[in-house]
Length: 88
Image 1 (tube, helix red, strand yellow):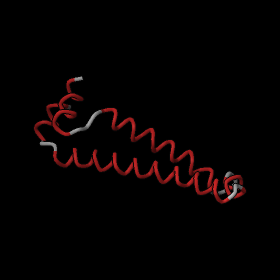
Image 2: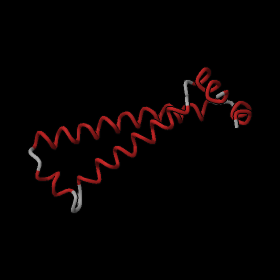
Image 3: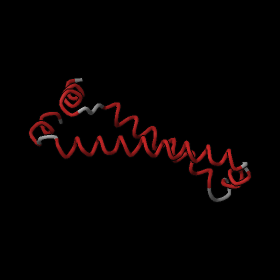
Image 4: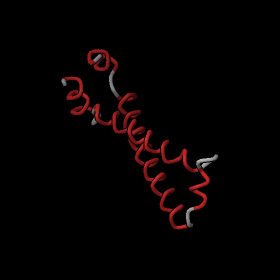
């Protein structure tokens, strides 16, 4: 796609970045929903090491989400309006 190529070449952004961000956010939500409320009972019944590993996975996903979000925000802020309008 020409738009994807323009953003990749000049700003390091691809449509895959947006898809990856969405995918990681959905995975994190799916993991976290099992840590509270009624479904959190199974989580709280895990041993401490398993809980730590589970939450570490959540933390890693959050770090990846933050990194992608920063990349997307920088692209939006630094992209010249004329190039953004031309790509639309």
